[in-house]
Structure formats: C-alpha cells, structure tokens
Length: 399
Image 1 (tube, rainbow, N blue to C red):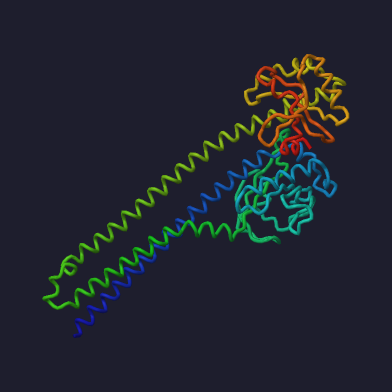
Image 2 (tube, rainbow, N blue to C red; image 1 turned 180 degrees about the vertical axis):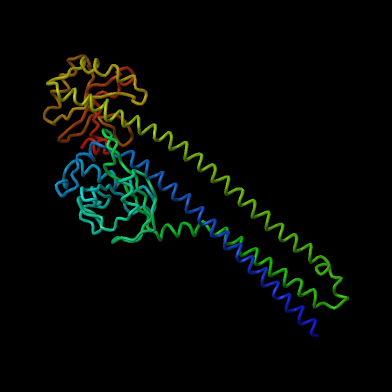
C-alpha cells in the first residue's frame, strides 16, 4: 500500500511537471508569435507613413510658419485637406499630422487631419508637451521610427514618425506623424493569436485526454484490457499527437509563406510607388510649374506658342497630354467659342458629359474650365472644349 501511494505520488509530480512544461512552452510560443506580429505591424505602419510623407508637397509645407497666421492660408488648407482625405482611407488610423521644432527645441504642430474646430484639433503652433526623447531624435538624427505605446492628452498611441528633409539643405525641416490607438493595436494582435491559442489549448487537451485514457485502462479488470481501445491506447495517443503536430506545422508553414509573399509584394509595391511619386514630384515641381510660369510671364499665349513650349514635355511617358484650361466666365463663353472656331476648330464648343457619359453642351454655370489647348493634339481631338469644371473631382482640384 505504501509503495502504491509513493508511485501514485511520483506519477502526479511527473504529470504536473510535464503539464507545467507544456504550459510554459505554449506561453513562450504565444509570446514569440505576438512579438513577431507586433514587429511586422510596426514595419508595415512605418512603410505606410513613409509613403504618405513622400507625397507631402514641400513648397506648401515650406510656406507655413507654424503659427496662428497659417490659419486660412491656401497652403495650410490644402495640406489639412490632404491629411484628412488620407486618414479617411486608412483603417484604424486616428491622427495624421506635420510637426516642426522651434529654436528652443520644442516640438509643435504645423497642421493635422482633424476638422477645423474639432475638440481634438491641434492648431498651428501648438506645443506638443508630451514629446519623448524618441520624438526629438526624429529631428536631431533624422531617423524614421515607430514608437509606443505612449500616452498623451489625446490617449495612448502607437505612432510612426518620418522626418521630412529640406531639399535645398538636406536638414530635417519637419516630421510626419501617424497615430494608431494602442487598444486597436492590441486588439489586432489578439485577433491574429486565435489560431496559436487554439493550438496551445489543443495540445493541453490531448495531454489530459491521454492521462485520462491511461488512468481508465489501469482501472480495468484483466479480462477488459483486451478491448480495442485498451490494447491500442498508445497508438491512439501517438496518432493524436502526430495529427496535432501535422496541423501545427502546416499552419506555421502556410503562415510563413503568406508572410514572405506579403513582404515581397510590399517591397515591390513600395519600390514602384516611390518611382511614381518621384515622377509625379518632378512633373509637379518642374515641368508643370514651368508651364504655369510660362503663362504667368506672358500676356497672351497662342496655340502655336503652347505647341512649341510643350513639344519636349510630350516626351514624358508619365503624361498622356498637356492642356491649357482657362477660367471662362459665363458671359464670355460665346465669344471664346467663336474665336476658337475662327482659328480653325470649326466644331469647337464647351461641352460636358451627361449621366450616361454622352457628350452634350455644357449647362449654364458662372464659370467654365474648357480644355482650350492640348498637346499632343493628335489623338486628343475629342477632348477640346471639355469643361473640366463639370467633373466634381477635377473642379475640386482646380479650386
């Protein structure tokens, strides 16, 4: 009786030790998986923030003073609208903003994505009193980073910061910031841990099922041990463990393959996106600005002069066509149409598309924005006279 009690005691100790080892391994696996998820999410957030920062118009940012004097300035309003529109298409993103650093080392806001007058809006010049050493290093060292969770007066955040450099000097002139609520961040990690948790629970279940199976077999009378389950208990347990391991390694293999594909896709897409951004930046800051200055410095630019100036611009494969779109008041519409017809475009008229995409004369409005000059003209004949103001997106961009 004493030997039986000692064996039972040793068996319980052994089972407890094995179970605690399983719990420890499962906890370590879940912790490691959570860390990997957090790292990948931070990499993705930083990548996203870098792409958004690359799309910030430097000239608009450079025009800001970081004071209340910026309120109402076109550059301020354009940047604010850009940040608000960008935030609206990014799930879980709460704030986008641009920050600067004054001569005293304090970090302040230039502009944010909040609607004007919002309780959470940061007006231009507002000091960010909760700035951490990591925030300051973005300005002093020029290194992009993802930080947090860090608390401030608005909540607790996971934040990405990307320095924006002055293209003339290379110095850090501002920083772009992007905030994700820390609770949303943790919830996303937890949702991705469901499968690993189920695997951990399953192995614990298999372990205790085996303990119960062997305990049941020990209690059987000798003649009952010839039953199939009693005779094959070890095989059943081995099959259960092998089945679980097969599922586990299949899941891990599939997950790693998906991660590798996602990372490869992200690298390729970012490389192409950066190339597109650079092309658009060159188009905006050099070619389009040059064309605008050409018109601004000339009293009148006729069709032949426009053709001569844009001849080399049409070689840019990024651009399908270059157009001059003047603002034409309603009372000048008929005079413009007659003048263009005399130049040789006999069928010229200001037109728009109806709800079916069909051409029709532009309806009455205070101002028209017709495509007056177009290069290359060949292949774009049908565009002449189209009122870009009739399209809400184009009109908003022009305004």
